[in-house]
Each structure stands twice: as structure tokens, then as C-alpha cells.
Length: 154
Image 1: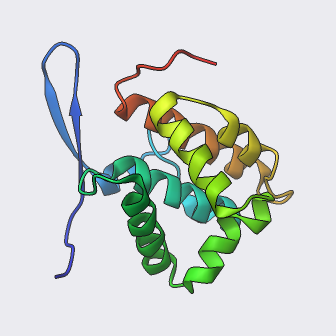
Image 2: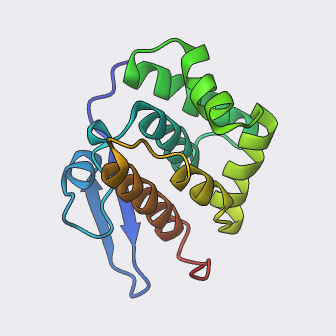
């Protein structure tokens, strides 16, 4: 089945609801809460952030392992790469093994831990530093917001 549209459902404390086409969020770089345009980032940062974001947005799978598998598959399709390439970006290029990567992602999403964010900020590309740093900060802020803003600022 071909996907024709994706939306983000925003529910605010005052009870109001907003349905935003995902494309509008990704394209609106001026909005402080907007997701970045990954095309301006290094391939490593873009692909790792896409995996993290897909895991955070997955409401279909109950088990974290299934969320990771689905996120990797979606990232492979989005970037048109071999699965081992995406896994390499999430592990070897970050000096991690897959279990460590999964633990850091889980801690980031479920506990608001900033270790993965700091690790990614330490791995930005020289030629794409500004875009990489902006993308990392925005993705983790976005995840914090979709998780209800329950995490304190670190």
C-alpha cells in the first residue's frame, strides 16, 4: 500500500487540537519547533536522526525492538540505502554497538536523557556543522514536545 500523506496530531494543554501535514513541519525551518531539512545535514546525522525520529513517532508497535526495526526499515527506504549502511551510521560511526545505540535512543525518548544528543553533537561534520547542530537540537526538542514536554530542560 502506498503512503500518500503523513500528519502530526498536536494536542495542547488547553484542549485545542491541530492536525499538521508532516511536509509542512519539515519545510518550515523558521518555526522554532519545526523539524529540520535533513538534506542540508551530513548523511550520518540525517540518517541517525531519521531513525531516532521514526522510533519516537511509532505508535503502531508495542515493543521497543519492533520500533527500532521499523525505524531502520523506513530509513532504508527513505534514503534508498542498504540496511547495513544505516546500521553502520548508528553504531560504528558513533563508536557504539547496536545495544548501546538502542539504550541511548530509549533513554532519550522515554526518559529525556540528553546523552545521545550530546554524542551526536560531538560527531557533526566540519562542512555541515551548522545544519547538523541545528537538526540535532530541533529533533530532540521536537521529541521532547511530542512526549508532552514532561522532561525538564537540561
